[in-house]
Length: 389
Image 1: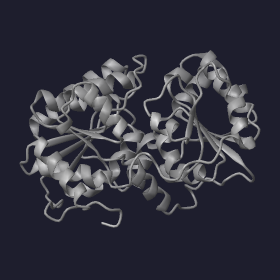
Image 2: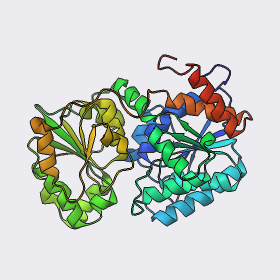
Image 3: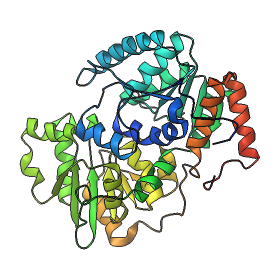
C-alpha cells in the first residue's frame, strides 16, 4: 500500500460485502490490505463449514464482523430482498464511508443497492464482465451493479470496453487486473497440513467441478456432464459441490459416479495444488476460468456461454456448449491436440488488490470517487504498484 494511506484505522469505515466462496477468495487480498479498516459482512448465501468456513480460516480473514440470517437456501428473489433489507439496516445503524462488492452474486446486487440508495459510494470489483446471456442470473446481477456503482474496477481492457459501451463514464472505470491472480499465488504458497491436502493420483489425471444450474437443475443436463466425464481417457477427480451432490441424489444418478474419483469440495489451497498438477480441468466455474491462466493448465468450460472470453481468446480455455461432446473434447486435449498454452495471465500482474484498497482508502478519507480513481491511475503511471511492494 501507499504509505500515505494508513490501513490501521479502527473505524472499520470500508464495508466489504460477500456471500459466496469465490467472493471470499477474491476479496481476501483486499481485506488483508485494508486491515482494521475493513468491516466484513457475510450475507449468509453460502455460509457453512464446507463452502465458507474453511476459506475464512485458511485465507486469514477470520469470522466476519456481521453475518446476515435468512438468506442461505432461499430463492434468488428472497435472497436479494432479505439481504437488501438487512444491509440497509446495517448501513443506517453504522454508516460506512464506502462499500466494496465483488463479482456477480446476489450478495453483490443487494450490497450495491443498499449502499447506492443511501448515497454511499460503491466500488465494484471485477466490473464489466458480460456474457450477454440474460438466462444467467449472474448477468442480471452484473448489469444492476454496473448501473449503481461509483467506481468500476475492471479486470481486463475488454471489461472496460463493455462498460464504456453501456455509457459508463470512462473516468469511473479503471483496469486493475483481477485479484484472483494474487489470491491464487498466495494459496499456492500457503502450507497445507496433512489433513487438508489431497493426494494426487498416480499418472495423468483430470480435475472436474460442476455446480451451475444449467448443468445440475435437470436430469438430462446432469447426465450429459457425468457421462461425459466417465468417457474421459484418464482418471477423473470429481470435486462434488453440495448442490451437485443433492441433484445427483434427487435424480437418482448415483450410478453415473462409478469410475470417477469423487471427493468433497476442498479448500482453495488444496484445490489449486491438485489442479496445478492435472493434465486438464473440466469445469463450469467462473473462478476456474481465471485460475487456469495462472496455473497454466488447459480448461474445458462446460457452459452455454462465458463472460470471460479472455480465457478462451488467450488459448487457456475452450467453451464446450451443449452441442459438443465433453469426452471427445477432453480426450483431444489429452492426446496432445491442445497446443502450447501461453505464458502469463490475461487477468493482470497481481497488483489489483493494492489498487482497489488504495481507491477505497482514498474515498474513506474524503476523496471523491472520481478523484480516487485518478489518484490510483497516477500511482500506476508512476510505477508505484509492483509485486515486490
